[in-house]
Image 1 (tube, one colour):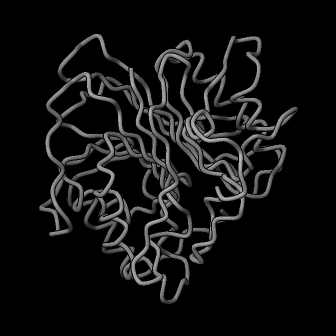
Image 2 (cartoon, rainbow, N blue to C red; image 1 turned 30 degrees about the vertical axis):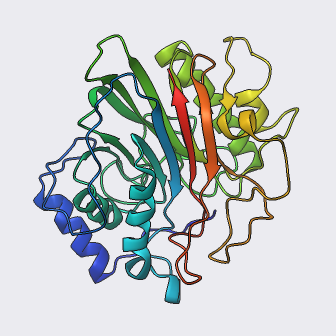
Image 3 (tube, rainbow, N blue to C red; image 1 turned 45 degrees about the horizontal axis):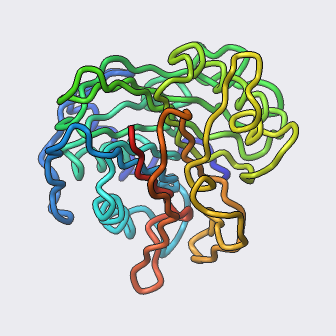
Length: 315
């Protein structure tokens, strides 16, 4: 949901030092340090034609004063939640630099794409992407801001309360050079209704320009309900094709009828009667086989204030 400005604490500074120690300049990847012992390592992919396992996960930014739900008290559980699904690609939101550093150590089998929204380096939340390096080869990656100046780090427009952005990566299956797809990961503004609509339009146009709406996956926290018709961010992305011929498929809705038990933001309460604001969207040439809202918990504790959403997708 909402977020606040960067908050410097000793623990967050430690995470940034971890990243800096890896020699991570803005927008580039770094080598992974030795992982902590958290769960079982993901088994290497053996079939290049295996379905894609996709996850979107709002992590809840570590600088928040969440008391018993603070980052350091739930981060191991969050990694276990990721490992339980073993995603091939993971789009995260509200990922501060310290959280990125921790996850890169805990998930060394994953490559990483991400920069801070405030300055295009380490400051501010990231729409960080993780992808399995045993299965995919990175062909290209980049970032743009959801504003009238998309190439200006930290820019915001319309009625947006905070800078918002998209990170993307183009991947090739290591076992089959013909299997190429792109992942776009984003976090829309929590205040600006105009900003969310314009962000959806900008995202749609970028997908069209970069992929021609072929083999593209979108993950994100859109801060707006699914299934809204007419002039809405959801309809802009999933409704009738526009001038660019664009249309995306909501993986969850393709497999589940609309209902009251599909809320994804719960504020650490575990309640599921809200609205589904976290989505996985697909171009029509990718077909969802499974889609779930993951509500795992441990003794009433949750890994984040959002439930992650997963999908298993066929080529």
